[in-house]
Length: 242
Image (cartoon, rainbow, N blue to C red; front, side, top):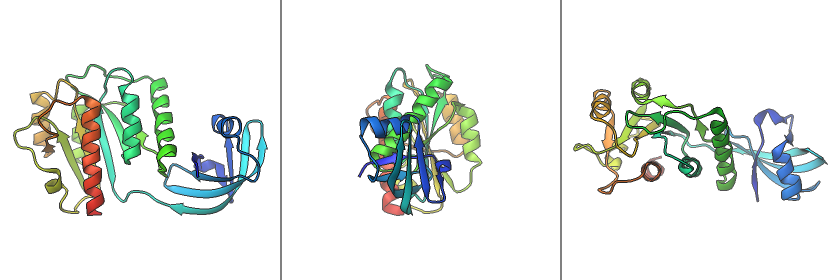
């Protein structure tokens, strides 16, 4: 059954309301009608089975019949240099499908793009919501404003119960399964650099803050490829541990 997003503020006393573009899509594109069962999620981890009771031009109202909650017991956040063009759209969609908790655009010394407009961030959030609808996820991958690499590493190093992992060309890399073998954490931060790679200053700074280095193989990967490979490997490993 299709899986649609509804703002948690629009679920009150067992009644849900969908308005705006979401209602237009359900009414005019999907042709939903009164009495139709519908599956919903609130972006916070809750899923609902409901039934539509009212339809107007731009609004759907329905009754909640049952609910459940499903969310990963651990967080995986990915800090990634901003790729050019539409490649970030694809990266956001795939990271959301994989179950990444948060995507943070990273400003590195070799970054070619260092900012994102408010309009782009709004569009990226829509892509993340759409990906959750498509893959049956009950929560939504958050997308933060861009952050400077050094600031991000410094903040991540202060987080408790967290593993900080950087994919890069370091001579002292560790196998992911070794890094994640002990369940002494509930959050992982992954750092993916620009296509020129991290600078020596950035690598030295990460080392000084006890960031762990992993290798993604001998081939040079584009930003979005490296991010997806790292995320998929870590998510798969975590599924085996939890």
